[in-house]
Image 1 (cartoon, one colour):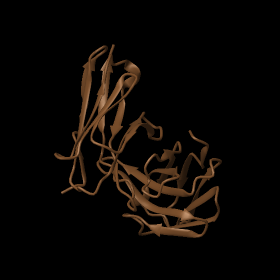
Image 2 (image 1 turned 90 degrees about the vertical axis):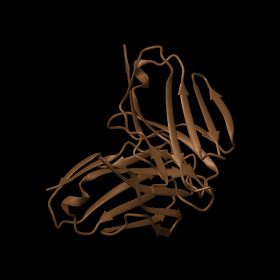
Image 3 (image 1 turned 135 degrees about the vertical axis):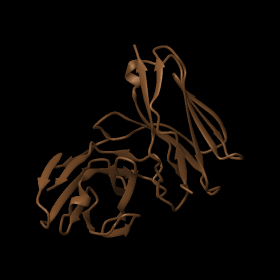
Length: 113
Length: 110
């Protein structure tokens, strides 16, 4: 898994609660990404980071925030979880700004009830 | 129009057959072409990467890119049940982020 660890792997949470997902890498890759994957939609980019404290929005960023205080860690926060955020979340890393040759983590399955 | 189009499948083939997968894309700025394989409940894994038109071979896998027609193919020879997965073909461009389609599900039957 190219030295990527996502935690937790599974989580059930209640509507309205904040949730933080963590992505940890040991590859020292500059770029990190958060995607969500839903049936019928494929993988969609939520947020990405191009360096420590440098982040930007993807195509489905509403309701999500991110932080990257260290090269190895990229946190995704659902500020107030909703049922529409029930999904599988994947973190990816790359040494290329285009996201090419990205390596993915194993995913976090999040259920909002 | 979606940036990447793939037939969702499932594409069912007998073991040993050649699997042929295709993608079309709409943005002529795409320069990099990749194939990812994703097993159920796992993260996508990079299979092949190319940045030019033509063929690239890696073992049983051959990737083909035709930039003039915006068409990408992946061929899997001597398919195995372990090749049963979803295959994704995100094209990329400098300064842009990978755009994923929904993928094609492949079933290789013993």
